Structures are given as C-alpha cells and as structure tokens.
Image (cartoon, rainbow, N blue to C red):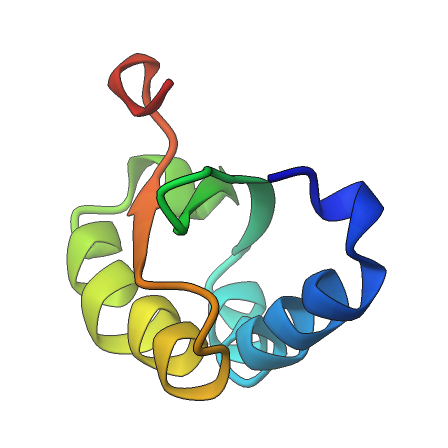
Length: 86
C-alpha cells in the first residue's frame, strides 16, 4: 500500500510515532517510515544512534509498535527495516 496515495493514513501513523519520537531524538536517534506493506505491516528504519542501539528491539516493541498499533487500526504490526522486510 502506497502511503503517498493515502496521506491521511500517513498522517495518523506519523502522529502516533511522534508520541515516542522525542525520546529517540533525546538519545541521538530517530525513526522514519519506509513503507506500509499490503499485509498491513509497517516497516520503519532507525536513523542516527538508534541504528546501532542495543535497546532498539525493545524500543520498537514497547514504544513504536504499541503507539502505532494502538492508534492506527490499519496497521497490524511494526517491524524494523532489513533486507528480509522486503
């Protein structure tokens, strides 16, 4: 699903991520949306310090995924970008 064709959905996802983004930025990192797959899985990519952080998986599950799936019912799951995600 192309998020560029669904700006209202992209806005909802960004708003949900924005609830945890200040914590990521405070630690020198951030996260960006890569795509929303047809199976309703959101793929995100860590930037900055988050790329190599040992806590990134916990941040994904307890922070980003919880915020997004709780507020955006169109998203079933959030995963971190990897070659396997495509």
